[in-house]
Image (cartoon, rainbow, N blue to C red; front, side, top):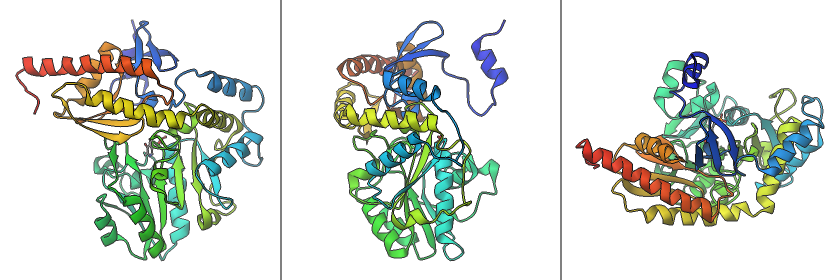
Amino acid sequence: MSNWQDDAANHLVLNAGPRLAMLTRGEGSYLWDADGNRLLDFLAGIAVTSLGHAHPVFVEAVSRQAATLAHVSNYFATPPQLALAARLKRLAGAGIDGRVFFSNSGAEANEAAFKLARLHGGAEKPRIIALENGFHGRTMGSLAMTAKASMRAPFEPMPGGVEHIPATIEALEAAIDDRVAAVIVEPIQGEAGVVELPEGYLAAARSLTLKHGALLIVDEIQTGAGRTGAWFGFSHEGITPDAITLAKGIGGGFPIGALVTYGAASDLFTPGSHGSTFGGNPLATAVADAVLAEIENAGLVENAARRGEELREIIAGIDSPLIDGIRGRGLLVGVALAAPVAGAVVAAAQERGLIVNAANPETVRIAPALTIGDAELAEFRELFTVALADVSASLTTSGKAPA
Ligand SMILES: *Cc1c(COP(=O)(O)O)cnc(C)c1O
């Protein structure tokens, strides 16, 4: 007799722990598991399903484009590809000089950014600066820029030249020189537990990189597409980067990534220097274009800002000794815990019918669809409150009082 846990354990590569549930259907901010249980989804596939599940705009775009033209290769252009490129340039303020490279994932967008940095730096500028606790993906180039040594160690040697420095303006001032090709940062470090950059960091990084002829690359894979209550994380800071990378929320659940370049950085790739068979295919780009159009038309960036404030108020109003702080912006929120029990909180929440995520043992990450309203927030308040109480009670009975 097989069940889904056994099937997952027997068939899937052992790169992840046991799956948390077998999910079979979604609608809006709700998911259903194989036993018919309904779950309120406040993770959205890690900040991916920006319109929620099975949104009519998403369904229509997938169906219409699949029935029209799905793939042709990059020997050819297609209308959805050009429409999405133009939309991304406009939303990202990339100007007429801006250009877009399409990939199929975030890691691939960062691979393209890594190659952009190499093309810019050449032999004179071999250094690439990334931040401690930063996450940029799991392919070799993006992994080299990812900070966590334990993720990189089994796969050494890494592509060379990448250094990780603390996320302070002083550390960047001390580290940067004319041999730096690029500085890559996340506006909010999502995987690190929703950790914001220090006040003024992006502006300082912009002036330091300009001074030393280095590219400023902003990884907007988790923070982009309206998630933080602005179109991109850097939009809050009023700077213009040299490149941004995108994925997750721009496709609303359809796999797609992108590198958007600005100004002179747009002239670095030349024919033959990079490519992707699937990247920029009409199916993925039609869906992302429709998702971003819906985010624009339905005012979902504004909704993320407003609902994000309400979400913070709700969490701040929960009387639990486990809550130690709230980080993040818009609908990318990290709840700092007073004890390393994020895994237990996530399990208790799921038991009660709520999906949230343990970004690390001390942080619960919350990233719902940008479409949430009063009903979802009220239900979240109720379920998250009882989940925290469940964990507090079990800590008390086991004699381990939270710190
Ligand atoms: C998720 C993420 C990535 C990697 O994206 P994949 O699509 O998983 O390859 C890179 N950078 C950041 C900031 C991310 O959040």
